[in-house]
Each structure stands twice: as C-alpha cells, then as structure tokens.
Amino acid sequence: MIASKSFGILGNVVGRFRFFAFSSGCLAAIALSACAVPQAAPTQTAAPAVTPLADNSDSRLFAETYESILQYHIEATRADVIALAALGELPALDAKVSIARDGDTVTLRRDGQTWQFGAPLPFDSTEWGKVTAAAIKTARDASPALAAQPIDELDELVIDHALATLDRFSHYSRPELAREWRAARDGYGGIGIILDGDTGTRIASVMANSPAAIAGIRIDDRIVTLDGVSSASMTAEELRERLRGPASSLVVVGIQRAGLEKPISLSIKRAHLVPPTVTLREDGGIAIIKITSFNQCTAESVIELLQQAHRELGDRLKGIALDLRDNPGGLLDQSIEVASQFLDGGTIVTTIGRNPESFQYFAAPNDHHAERLPMVVLVNGGSASASEIVAAALQDSGRAIVIGTASYGKGTVQTVLRTSNDGELTVTWARLVTPRGYFLHHHGVVPTICTAGAPKGAAIAAILAKTPSPALTRPRDMLDESGWTALRDACPAERADRSLDVKLAHRLLEDRALYTRVLHNDPVNLAHNYQSAAR
Image (cartoon, rainbow, N blue to C red; front, side):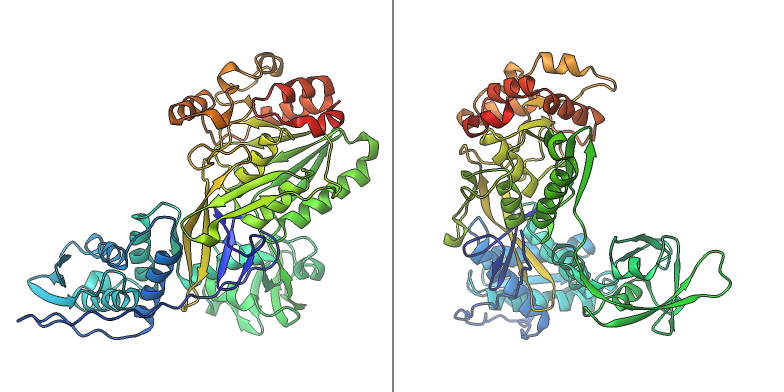
C-alpha cells in the first residue's frame, strides 16, 4: 500500500499521514473533526415515530469518517451515499435486518418491527454520522447476532463496507489493529521480541541489537512473569501490550529457559524500536539489497547498507541488485528517498487527485553523490505501491534493468487519518504518474527481462538470447489500454521468488558489455548519464 500526504515531501503533515504507501521520519496523524452543516428539518411521520439521534463517540466516528471521505477521496461522493452503503452491511450480518431509504426517511426493519430516522441533507456528515450510529444501536438492541459482535469490530465492518464501494484500498482499522500498523510504520517502545502466535509466551524471534538481545533473551525462551505478574493470567494481547511502554522505562521479565530449573529474572530498559525492513547479502561481488516494506527507517537502512557494501567489497563491488519482490509498499516519502539514492536528478513520481493538495511532484536531488554502479531491480506480482514507485523511477530513467514478472499494479496513494477513537482511516486520494507519464494503477511495472512461467532450471543464456523480447519493447508512454493489456499478458504477474531472477542479475552485473546492451535496448532507456558507469 502507499500512503502519503504532506506539504513539501510526503511524510509529515498536520492531521494526515501519507504513505506510499510508503516515507521517512516519524509521521503524526490526528483525527479530522467533522464539519457542521445545516441540519435538515426533522421528518414528520405518523407511526412509527422518528427515532431521536444522539451525539456520542460512535456518531462522531462515523461523522469524521464521512467528512474525511468527502474531503480527500479521489472520487467525489456524498455523505448520504456513504452512510447508506455503511448500513448496508447490517443485513449481511443478520438476514432478518433490512434497511432502506424512502425520500426523507431511513427505515430499519427486523422481525416485523420498524424504526425510522429522518434523512439529513446529502452532504451533512455530522447528521449522517448520528443516523448511522442510531441505526446500528437500534439494530444491536433488536438483533442477538449483531449484539454478539464486539462494537469496535462491527464499526470496522460497517465502515469497510462503505469504503469498498469507493475503491479496494481505502479501509478503516479499529484501535487495536491501528496501533499495530503504527508500530510497524513508526516504531514503538519495547524490548524487541516477537511472541509465538499459538502459545503467546514463547519467544519466536529477537531483534538484533535490541534491549532483549543485549539482555541475553533467546529464541524459544518463555515468558512466565512480567513485572511480577504471571503470564498465565494474561491474554496474548495483554502480554504484548505490557511488554511495550515508553522508551527508557523498565520492565522486569521472568524467563523460563530449557535446561534451567528456575526462571531467570531480567530487568530490561525499553527502547524506541522500528522493525527492520532492509537486509544486505554480498554474493560474488554483487550487493543484493532486499527491502520487504517501506517504514520510517527504510531509506536510512538502505544508505547504511550501501556504505557497508562499498566498505567491505571496495573495488570488488560490481553492482547492486535491489530486490523488491513481494514488497507490498509502505511510506511514500521513503520510496522517494530510496529512489533518490540511485538517481542524480530527474523525476521520481507525480501524484494527482481531486484534492488540490494531492498534486505533488517528486524529483531526485542533483549532485548528491548518488550510487552509480550498474544496477538491476527484481520485481514480481507481489511488488506494489511504494516498491512500484522505486522500480518505475529507475526503469523509466534508464538507471536500472528490471527483472522478474509484472508487478501488482497498485498506483494509488492513501492518506492515513487518525480517528478520535485512536483508530485509523485510510483513504485513497491520489494516483501515481511515472516519469514517462503513464499511470501506475493497473499497469504497474513490466520487466525488461521476463521470467514469468520460466521452468525450474531454465537456461539463463536462452532467456538473455531473446532479451529484450519484441513484445516488451513498445514505449510504455505510448500505450493505450489494449496495448497495456498485451504488454502485461506478455509477462504476467506471478508471486514467484525464483533463484533464476538473482542468477540473471549476477550474469548482467558481471558482464558490463551485456549489461550495457540490455540497458540500451530497453524501450524506456534514458541512460545517457549512466553509460560511463555501465561500461
């Protein structure tokens, strides 16, 4: 996913959080309060009476959701349309429930009972939020199936049902899940362990250089107490929450380790931790940099690992393989910064949408010591959003040869808004345009060297002999939709993580003449600034 929204660079913005779906630096998000609009006159009916509306936390959640959609979504809509779509989830959860609008009245029925709500003005987010909350409360009071649904989860289902009518990437995360998303993006205060999902107490992994690693905690250790409280008395969620806390605060962990008769007690100082997303593998003079997603530390990690590769390999470093396979995206400004490490000036991506703030242009800085070694990028059908931004920028500029299969084709940007209940609303608000001027959405990145459908043990020489394929050589910015369909059909998206991709990267980066030939035959090649580095 790509999330983003900002003034200047994608990242920090008051009241919003943008990812590209993918950025650097800590991003803060706050809820947007719903704008008050003149209230519609109450509907006069006989029996049944119009149900009174209350202003409460649920109504505020729906109101701010509707207002945020009206303000930011890439397509124009109305509050009444969104609210009725949201309430349309109730019959799916209880077939005895029906809900419909008839003029100025919204009618809810179940088992012969009828309740009516006055329909506010079409764009009145505040009042439609009240109608939604009142209808859900009424339905829960009448329906055992709905009453059994935890209210946070029901709110999530209802809002997601409405958002699904707009696009497939907008969504709402209830507070519990939103906190986990924020931790993955921005980091969290903790000790750096992951607990086994089945037992909840076994340590499945330990983050390198984390407080837990420094304290000597090992994989397969079990947490038996936390601050003197037995872990048996806590749910897995409660245990995870209690392990987290402000950086520099202390937590006392009781560990049971195989081979020891008694548990050991460790006093550990929490730290601010950001999950690692980048790894480096050096193989035969090639630096293979794998990025699994884009969080606030991704670009910094790429810079550090590039420096490490140069430091350790020196003149033996032949080239860079950037592995973006199965990378679903992340923060937008991080994707911009990662691409900038390999580009000396030039466009990276442009975003356009309905909201004026969505029109943004991102370019790499000039003369900033960009990496100039020969480079390939690996993508597959799981490469999406922020990873597609990076791959498209490097391909369109002629900076790198792309290997693999067609990418996912998620070319939209989401803005992430923190709601008043500590949840998150993710709203699609812009489309991505590559340096060559085509939309990434549905099109994605199609490799120069295609390995889609390649059998196990496929010969590298045979693939390179027909590279680039005539089917893949048409200029991307000149294609209509039928042309794009043909292009993607020539190298369809697959989720394969083939060793063949890496072998092809090695072959190209070890043979400068071959690398230059393939790079210069690329239909989107603009590699004049990099020809000397490729020879």
